[in-house]
Image (cartoon, rainbow, N blue to C red):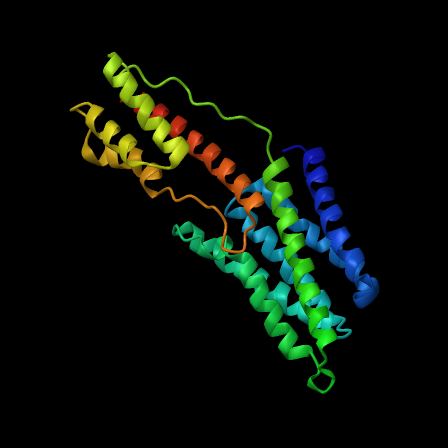
Length: 266
C-alpha cells in the first residue's frame, strides 16, 4: 500500500481513539495525547492482515500500557494499563498460535480486555473508598473501551478494503459436461455462501486426473479443508458480526480462485 494509504489508515485510528481519549481525558490528563497516537498504530494492522497485524496491535497496546504504568494517576489509569497489558500480550501470543491454525484468542479479544479491566480495577482501586458510584465509573470505563474496540473493528472491516472478489470460471476439466458444470457451481456456492466445504472437496477429489498423486490432491485441498470461519466472539454485537460474515465470504471466494488456479496446472 502507498504511503498515503498508510497515513489515511493511521489517521482513522487517531480519530477512533481520539474520541475515546476525549471521554477519559479528565481522568488521565496530558498522557492521553501520546496514548491516542500509540493506540492508533493498531489500526495499521488492517493493512498487513493476519497474523502480521497482531504484532502491530501488540506493540500499540503494550507501549500504551507502559506509558500508563509510568504515569499512574489514579485507578482509571491503572485499570487501563492492566487492560492494555492483557490485550497486548494476548496479541503477541496469538502470532505464533495463528501459525499453527489457532485463532481462539483474537476471536475472543473483547473477553480478554474485560478480564484485564476487572483485574486492573481490583488491583488499583482503593478498598477504603469503595462506593457504588465508583463501580459505575468502572463499568463506564470498561464500556467505553469495549465501544472503542468495536468501532475500530467496524471501521477496519467496513472500509479496510473496497476490492470486490469474483470467482473465476472453473477449469475446463471440471465443466466438460453440463452435469459436472452444475455440480461444480453447486459445490462452489455451498462453500462460498454457507462455508460447507464437503461438496467442493468431494468434487475436486473425483475429477482429479489419474496421473495426479493423492499427495498433490491433498496439498491443493489443504487450504479448503483447514478453513475455519471467524465470526467473532460471544461479545461481538450483531451488526459487527454481519461484517465478519461478509469478510469471511470474500475470503472463501479467494480460496476458491486459488484452488481453480492450482487445478488448471494438472
